Image (cartoon, rainbow, N blue to C red; front, side, top):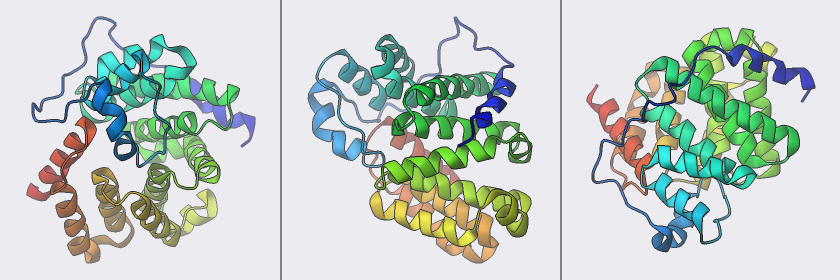
Length: 276
């Protein structure tokens, strides 16, 4: 990817995160709880979408247990204390918290910028680090939705998201979450700029989106977020003619037994979507 692709990050500099404001707590008492003893035995299920290797027992494993239990602020802080080895935890905890729980839009966007900046610096030092590439793309994608997809595309941020996700899939073909995220990118760009402009300007295609969604769900069929992204993608690409299938996908997501706190949030989103 050309070096100039990182320049739009200078546009992510406005807004601050109040240093003393605590993060919003997980609102559900029935979310699964993890400690270092049960974390590692559940690790393959918890990270089925990413294929991340488990941490060695110790403080970093404690941080991952906090994350999966919904203690996102403490998990992010613990990840940052562990330097390069803790960045995957810090970035994941920050991005997931910002996406699901942060009520203040300015703070939410600032948190996404933090993740983008940390991950971009890590990618510069470790170009083949799939976790850094994925969380860079995830946070940049969510940030782009916050400023409007059309504006983000005009700033060149879409090229960065697409390139990072394609690189993850090239390096780690079984990274289910990257397949789903790239599929959603194709669908959203087509929804915003149209099929012809999307194909010619951004290299996105409806058939590619459907293939990527299918592959992502094949790799990780019990992901509530993937099921909902596929449902939204179908509606963006094909409209109300796919409403019955989208509803079925939401029903499947809503019926899942959450594997961790993030999935508890996903299941609640699926239930809310069905009630709308």
